[in-house]
Structure formats: structure tokens, C-alpha cells
Length: 445
Image (cartoon, rainbow, N blue to C red; front, side, top):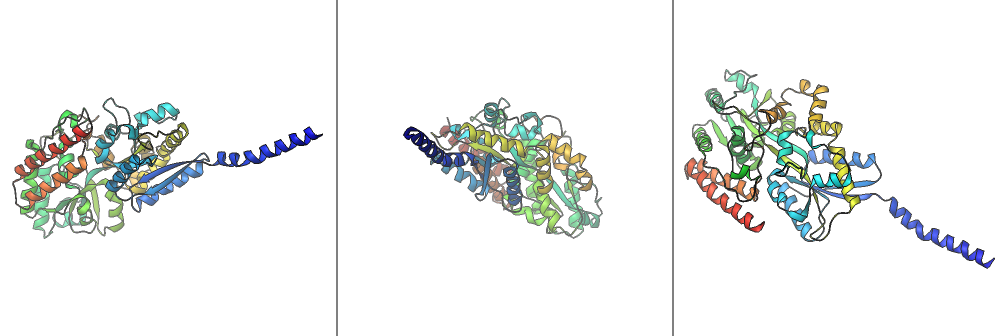
């Protein structure tokens, strides 16, 4: 009898002791996700996360806005050093070279899918997108997500006033210059402007004309690369920009996104900017407008444009703290969810970012999204133009590229202000940018 009571007591004690463990076992694995998207895109991203969390009980992704892309990048690096890095960090395309050289800080996507068995088909990603975030041997390092590219927006009402065809944007830079002159003659104070001067007027121009920005396949083949900013095409284009500004055909609006507001406000007739600007234009523009591919110089067979936006990188917790198999599976299942055709197509349609997968693009087409939204397919058609990307149009993989972009913009400003010639500005940017590359190479040997 005494043994029976002891056995019953032991069973009760075991039940009580194991109860908290059972409760803990039922708690979802938390996946920290730091991003740099402000509203409204940030809210749309967090809605996707909430829907993923509701779709299954095993994992809970917790999104946290960490400020701008550069601020998010700095925060992630600091967190890794203190072994508090998030599982996922959204990193803008300019930081790709830095992340590729981050060593143990990053867990490559192709390793995650191989280890977890969670299927994410790399062949479904559009060529310029996959290429930008792949290793030299073609393996995906990060999860493409909110990609954009650069296109032209134009004010159809102003075109009509100037006697231009409102349904035909010039295909070439020579044609754009002619249109800008007519716009000026019609009394339009700002015929054209640009946002993101380095991205639009340097990086995209070179890619579309199949000219390298830097040696060694724009940095894809190694850190020992040199800039190519003094090439004849870029000197010609920079000289044109400076001349157009002097003649009142072009307005330099400032660095980075400073030029974004000028087109939707109706201030400039032509605005070169991110395809992601489409949503803002739809909300703010009080005029008829169109979207078109970026121009090229006569005698050129144009290639694809390169991407902007950001990708999702998986980070280890710290220098000596790897992720568990369960954490990696949670990351993989989240990535699989957001890359599904329905989720990716909705993200594309809601935000204006390009669909990074062919299946999402085809789904959007089958839903008549492009028929209902004229010009919404311009970015994707431009990215697919010319077949597979070349070594010069695949993308850019330079360490310290954030700093290099700032140097390019600074030297462009000196040329616009008349302090130096266009050719000298590019030569200065080339010399200063190469020093950044050498510093990065020494640090990451």
C-alpha cells in the first residue's frame, strides 16, 4: 500500500513538473526581423508577417522598424558584434558587397534551403534580381524581396502643351533632349529632373549600355577591383547633364531621393526615379502621366536595367553564436511563404515594387493587373530586356559602395556648380572611390 501511494505521488509530481515544459514546448519559435521600410510600405510588410504568423503555429516572426536602410545596416553590424543580431535583416542593394564579405555574420540562403529541405526555387527569380544577390558561382546568398528599378515618368498634360505625343516617351537621350527643349519653349520651368543621381545617371546608364562601372565584372569576381568612371560614355553623359542644366533643360534636385517630390507635385515634366515611386505618383499627381523605359544613346542596343530596393539576409546571432536548426527552418518557411506567387504578386501590386519572381509576374498578368494599370509592367519589361544580363548589367558588387555613391554625388555636384569640368569630376570620383575599394579590400582579406 505504501509503495502504491509513493508511485502515485511520483506520477503526480512528474505530471506537475512536466506541465510547464509542455507549455514551453508549445510556444512558437520567435524569429526577429529588422527592416528599413517606413510607411506605407512598412505597414504592408508587417501585414504579410502577421498573415504568415496566422497561417501556422510553429514560428512567430517579429518585425521591427530600425530606421533608414543605412541605419538598419549599422544597427545589424553592431548587434552581431554583441551577439544580439536578428535572424533576418533587410539590407539595401548598396550593402550587398559588404554583406557578401561578412563571413560568419551571414548564413547564405542556398545553405539554409539545403539544410532544412524547404524548397525555394532559385530559377523562379528574375535574372537581374537573382544575379544581384548570388555568389560568383550563381548560388543565392539572400532572399530577394522588395526590388525596384529605375524608369522614366512623364507628365502627359505638359507633353501635350508642348506639342509632343503624350503617348510616346522618347526612346533615346537625343530624343529626350529634343523633348526637353520643346517643353522649355512651352514655358515649363523644369523639363526634367532625377532622383538618386548616382543610381540613375551613372549606374543605370552604364548597365543599359553594357559598359562596366568597375573591373572584375563590377566586383563580382573579387575585391581587387578598380572603378571605370572615366569611360567615354559616362564622360559624354555627364557633360550633357551639366550642359542641360546650364540651358535650363535639367534641374539637379539633390542627392539620393531629394528629387522624388518634383514630378508628382507637377513641378517637372519628366522625372527619372525608382519604379517604387509609382504609388506616390498615383496618390499625389493631379495630371495625366505615363511611365517609360530609361532612354539610351543612339546606335546602342539597350540591355536590362539593374535593381534597387533590398533583400532579406539571414544572420547568425554573433561571432560565436550560430542559429539552431529550428530557427533556420523558421526563416526558410517564412521566405518560402513570402516568395509564393499569391503573396509576392499582392506585394508587387500594393507597393509598386517589381515582382521578383516570374510566377508572381505571370499571376499579375493573368489577373489583368497590367491591363488595368497602364505602365505598371514597364519596370519588369525593362529588367528582362536583352535576354540574360551580361557581366556589366548583372549588378554591382563593390565593398564600401555606400561611401562610393556619396563620393560620386559629391563630385557631380561640383560639376553642376561649375567648380570642375564633368570629366574632372568623374576623374576625382574615380580616384577617391578606388581608395575606398582598397581600404575595404585590406579590411576583408
